[in-house]
Image 1 (cartoon, rainbow, N blue to C red):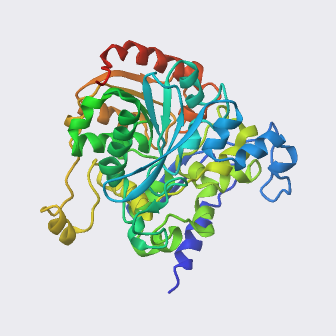
Image 2 (image 1 turned 90 degrees about the horizontal axis):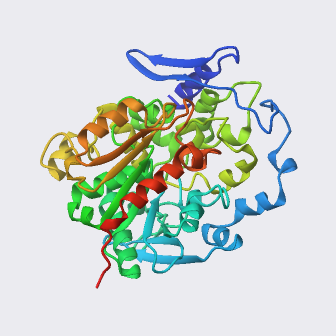
Image 3 (image 1 turned 120 degrees about the vertical axis):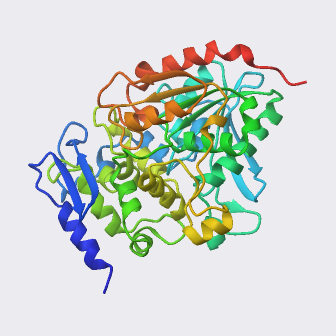
Length: 435
């Protein structure tokens, strides 16, 4: 029997009337979604589902150009000192690292979230991008790109057409990519410590680095986690919940066997979760990033949607997405579950081992929002109780603040970034210059 039958059935279940305020879908004892959604508008007006209105008609040519520029050229375009760097991990992945260079200043490493890239820190433009703000405040800004995204799709042995290239999750990013990136920056700048700012998955990989290579905690001045993720027990993301509960064969048909390449049917299943039938922006409702995280219409600069769509989603492996689903299903923060037989062979135990959050000895600041589907307050509280050295735990003072508002929010500077800068300065006396 074709997989299209359950796909169509699930899609039809989601096609609720625009009169309802939310969607709840259950199969037997499994609740896939229970999500309240809000009606988005585009540039102050409604856009019907079948409307022929397209974003390009009303878009500033400057914004159109930014949607096609890579991170390096975006930085260069706005008059900042841009640099491209390339590094190799100890397992053969070739990563691109972008820099807004201020030699001699304290380095800060920015690590993007799920389905994202270094562009996320600058694509909103000067005064609206955290990368530019940090540079303007006197920092040497470095922006990572983990394996599999737009800027890190090379390996010494495999191409992206090889299944082996995509045989990774965020575990390998934390174990290999982030340590290699930190070492590269410290060697280039000749200092012994740096600031670390991670968003979403960018926090996950930090916890994993600390668990697997705790010596790297001595290289961190302060770790700041934006929308920090570890536990996904209370996650409200319909995409993550779907990956947690549906049969693997169906999932692979919908999202790709190796590289995460969601099919149209997959997008269709979820676009009504955050968009209703009469007020909709197609660019939001067809972009898997928004379908995974939701969005906050009050903080989303819809004028910049072409730029967001031009840079996101930036790529991931199917296995990586499955690992997020596993965390949701298990309620724990642990390594990839290969099944009991392979677990026993790889780990020596039937269940995958949990990560050692007690190894996160570096100072940590956690920033979270009430309206975050991927990092809800209940899960952040669980993380907070496990970390040994949290110096700041701050709930953003905006009830609608969403997962993406930490990096793209219109009022992110006033609500959060200025506070972050103050905390960074208060922790900088521990920087020790290298010999």
